[in-house]
Length: 253
Ligand SMILES: C[S@@+](CC[C@H](N)C(=O)[O-])C[C@H]1O[C@@H](n2cnc3c(N)ncnc32)[C@H](O)[C@@H]1O
Image 1 (cartoon, rainbow, N blue to C red):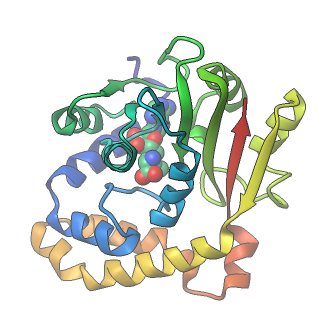
Image 2: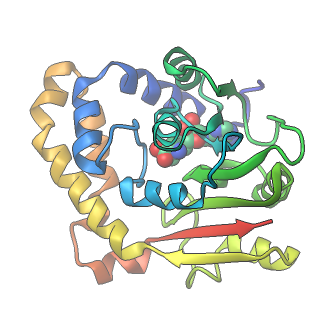
């Protein structure tokens, strides 16, 4: 995998190294999100349940997570539904951990979006949480990844605005939505900005509870980052919603 030009590559290597070692971070994730999936983002169990709702019944169901990190979320989906799990992520530390922890019916690959390849019509469900916008050409990558879906397959994308992506006027106006509209691909969207505000508040309160644990481990810098990431919820919801938004997109093939 070529590393030049990959956004935040070194930062994510450091993040997954910390996530693999830090007890404070594991406890923080469990308390803030409901399960420890080494989340670097916004995905709590309510959002994960939305993926589960889309997984069909059957013995030969394949689910891909784009930007799977260390694969903990996929393994949870597998425990709940018995699916085959597939994931890729550019972080070597994340994929090493994913491979060490995974059992049967699992395929984890280190790779970048735009370079990692699967045969057409491989997956029943593709999910991507807070990752798709790191693709060098999001529209091109998205169209290509839809080709990996089986007929009647579903893609679910969790999409944040206000940090990596600019804030637009609503779920129909995002860069992702515009790409889908241009190509005529069917999609549904859900605005989960309000529940994200509540989640980020919980994330901040939980981080503050674990401050001492982070510091004693020598991970005070990660604690500081958690505070920085949740600074946006120290004001009212109205103030938050002026700058940030979160949407779910469901694309049906
Ligand atoms: C914001 S984190 C989200 C991780 C996880 N999906 C979650 O919800 O907690 C973004 C993830 O995408 C991965 N990533 C970022 N850019 C990537 C790229 N160009 N190709 C593949 N993976 C990438 C990072 O290593 C990280 O695991």
